[in-house]
Image 1: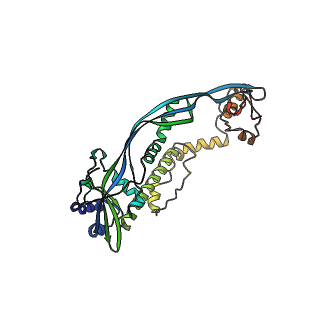
Image 2: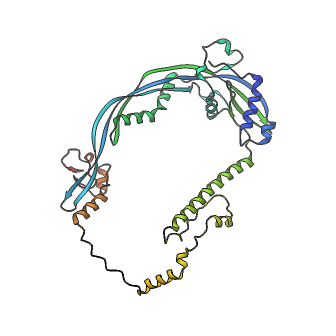
Image 3: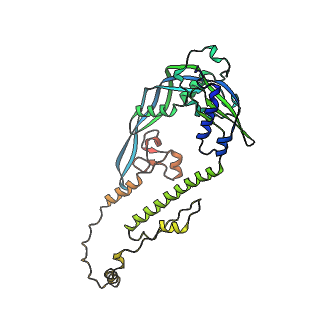
Length: 376
């Protein structure tokens, strides 16, 4: 158990510190809120660590590109994946956990789980002492209602994404498939620890609420009266940031367009949920002025000559050689090489069945008997 470091006489000061730290709380709430009932309680937590391993089965994929030939389509390229069955074991290492051994909504009326999670960050579970009944004197202690097996399953579930990532890295290849996993514990440590907390009731202007304060370091979390003015100011500031970012994006877009003739005249309007001064917006997003070269008489004369055909004609370019049909077919097939069918239903829906080896979209998972013809 972790002994109380905050006694009842200090609770008021920590409550005031918590209220003063809440940015959106009303100013008169911070000054005039009245502290009511205070009760101390020990909250049970399952604390420990898990050292996990996994036996897995899967497939290692290697992406390859083949150039094939079809009398009707010519040469074309096909991308496919060669799969190899693999299996192995990977160790995930040790990771600590601390999970509530009680159901917050049922055990603490008026205190939400997010508030408990917030103050939990301040408990130093490594400072826990062996259980002493004398340390419970004058305090309430909740009995645990969550079994340790459930806590271990939750701790393992929290590592699910990391476990899958470790397995894929162990499989290797360009792409990996995980077809079966059996995860177990190399070693595990789980013990029940009682963590100290104060539950404080408050009243203000006909309203009431509850706050939980960490009994070890004084960190608080709970309900307070929100200031409408501060909320509007905060959301107004966020709105101004959004508008500023949008304005910067539009100006940057116009700057890029000036280097690209024929694009600079296009303007994109961005709708905003906040009122915007039209004159300021016009100054921030202005129409690009015509360049000196476009306004000069010589440029106009050159354009007129080009339009009337009076300028000297350019020398006639040499005729380009006829493109190789095989090359055209290969380029066309390369565009089609990204065709992929997840299963034979997709092949039939596209009207491509049966699909032969070498045709766009053919892959070994569509050809179960390996005869070169899929989705027969």
